Length: 225
Figure (cartoon, rainbow, N blue to C red):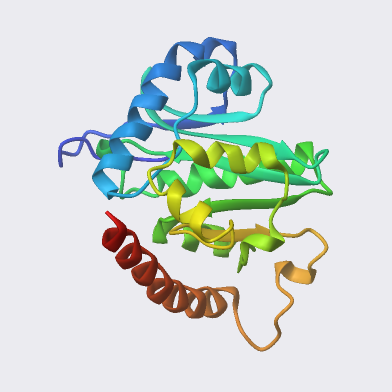
């Protein structure tokens, strides 16, 4: 089990990471509140979903929840687009008290496994501004891609409307934003097409490129305020 020190003491708790079910619906508001708080802390946008939407994902068996006893410790859900050709692992959130212990990686890994089990032929993708999530995705076999390589399903892109950076996505005709698009294609041999480089090397090169792009986008956004 996953050990976590509480308040810097030796007391440890076993954090369970499981597929969410009806018994976890009571945590929906806490999930959304955690997303809101994280968005404010990071200063970047994380799209909030309605209570009904998160609840539907739990009822469909398309969500992962982490619990410290009965205390909420993390969440992620999966979405399908383009008649199940694309799957997104979305809404990854870990409250501040549970960060720094590898819990996000465990949740992401479980969501990835659930996606592969339910939709083995689908491409798995995501948008993120978090370096830690990018590293986790890279380790799972994702690679950074342009937005044009992601789903063109309008329902997915409508989900970005609640993000504070949505205006950037609109101004660039949905070609770029502060988020980085990452994709896993089961057709790729060993998860990567590029030879001679490890997934992490490719990831680091992309990070450096995206840093410059994000800075330019952010500066342009501030100038328009």
